[in-house]
Length: 139
Figure 1 (cartoon, rainbow, N blue to C red):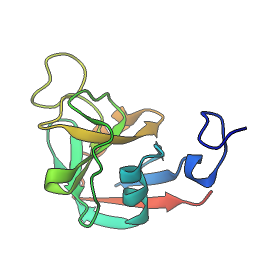
Figure 2: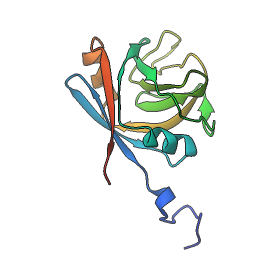
Figure 3: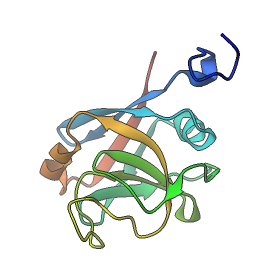
Figure 4: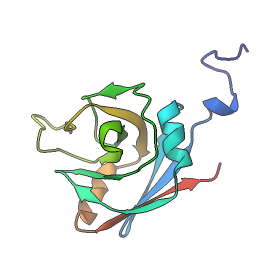
């Protein structure tokens, strides 16, 4: 198979996985094979105070370059995104203050870097927890 083809299996094509822990809730997520996602993965592990905006958790993750490969205002429940202007990692698990329908709407364009595996809405149970931890999952 030719390198760079959609079905090649080079190291760059393998998706990295992360574990998100907020209080008693643990969720795994799969990161895309983009440059920004790789930089976020390299910056882990991190434990940080977490902020809430509607049903979105976000927190500072300094030192990551946002390559803007997937910058968009269109996100879904379960998306993990990086907002380069604020050096912030965001996890969407429901409606935000800007939502018109069921989907979350970010305050600004974000670079979607991954997706939670499973039901992201369980994060609603831990919205009062003050810290979040993100770890790499070994392949």
